[in-house]
Amino acid sequence: MGKDEIFFRKIFILAAVLLPMFITACAEIRLNTLPTPPPTAKLRVFIQPISSLDVQMKTSHPSHQEFVERQFRFMQRFLERRGMYEVVPEEEVKAVLGKHWYSEKDLAARWARRDWQLARQVGKAVHAEYAMIVERFGKERIFYLDMMLINIETGKKFKISVQMPVGDAEKIREIIRVSYRAIFNDAKNDMITTAIRKGRRMAGLPTPKTPAIDITTAPIPSAPQKVRELDLEKELGGETMAEGRTRLAIYDFEAPEPFKTVALILSEALREELFRLGNFTLVNRENIVQVMNEMGLQQSGLVDEKHAVQAGKGMAARQIIMGNFGVLGSTSVLQAKRIDVETQGTLALASLKCQQGKEEEILDRLPELVRKLVEK
Image (cartoon, rainbow, N blue to C red; front, side, top):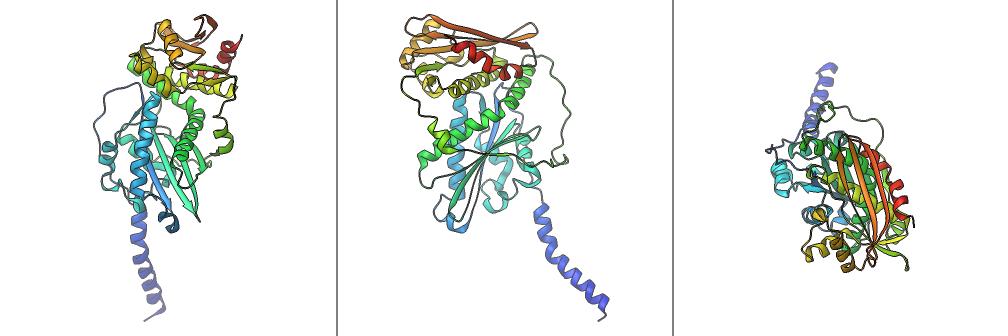
């Protein structure tokens, strides 16, 4: 046998070994398609928990399937309570992914390829604006959790990474809540831009055209993804408010139906601004919703100031903030006022305006609104 024949035989054998591996690595997951859901002003989000633990950690943590099921249920409840999200039902995500839904070894390794291309493809298939990826991973008994929000259309990502405690389920849920708040603060400008576009389409108003993006052929960004690592001691410590601070309830801003999500994002952003200011103890939105439900009221229909004050008393709040977001001609307006619960007197009034279609400017100017609201 000649040297050339031996050489080509070796090449053939090597190709025979590597080709199946190459095909497996490059093979695309066939995604099923779903009919377009009814229109909504809410941001449609699909949730995908994934995990990659080493052998040692798998024995002391919930299985991949248990993790997926628990995290999906928890994140679904958590996001839907925010009021601004429509979570893609688990059954629809399963229908799109088919047999790959619980495939830890096969699917978990595919999500991050080509800059999370699969997540965006699944997001397109379920007609979502965003993907929420919750990933656990660990090595040498150190457990980490990454939470990432991906804009399906643009591919823009917002990511938080934290080291997690082992075995403390309540603390883990609290850390996830703090992580979400950090992601919201990073992504709120992107989210309000998306919500504005949806609202304008629902209202029959013209929207700026954006070029269609083919996810399968779009170039992979060369810039590395920025990952924010949270200081948990600082973040969790900030939740404990000092005595003597005024207890304040912030109601969701009212708005016409197409722009309710825009108003909710502005309401949540206002809470974050006031939280960082440190002058108030804020009533959780969940507690506000609970009290309103018990009184037979809804935040979205809260027009009567007396009802707002009455609900404030039920939450032991000394002050409340309420307001509305609306469109007047070609101008968008956000109005808010701070009210003393005991006297029912108005303590401060504030408003912001911008050209319609540029509502993200209001978001950027929220610190200005806060300064006006907290003035004595």
